Amino acid sequence: MSPPRSTLHRLRRDAFSIFQDALKAVSPESAVRKHIKTIGNQLVAGNHSIDLSSVRHIYVVGAGKASSAMAMAVETILRGRISGGLIVVKYGHIVPLTTLPVVEAGHPVPDESGQNGAQKIIETLSRAG
Image 1: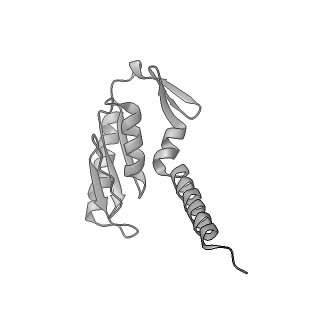
Image 2: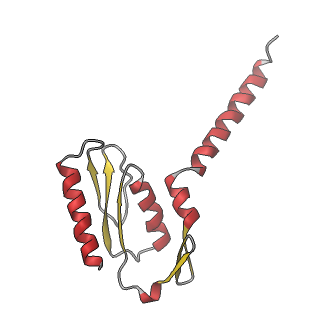
Image 3: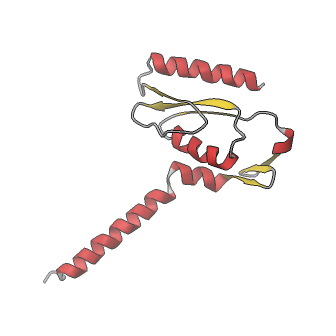
């Protein structure tokens, strides 16, 4: 004998809710927020801490499918302290950002857009010192 429809409906609803919570827990934004935060004027990343009053410029660079989602969390955490940078993502994986430019590129087969993005990241990092 099968369970009543109301029980199946409740079980499906509960399973979907659990699935949604699991996705949120492993999202790129959640991962960044779990490991990077500001406490007062300190930037805390894992076990490392940096006094932001001693930092003149902050550059954010990233490459990969989740990098723009991760950069979105970094933009929120650093609240206007970002001097520049560049994020390169696979086509179709862009998350619009407020501060940082995002370039879409080929993956796994590199293309001209990816090559240009990589060159711009190198230039950004060379400015950072």
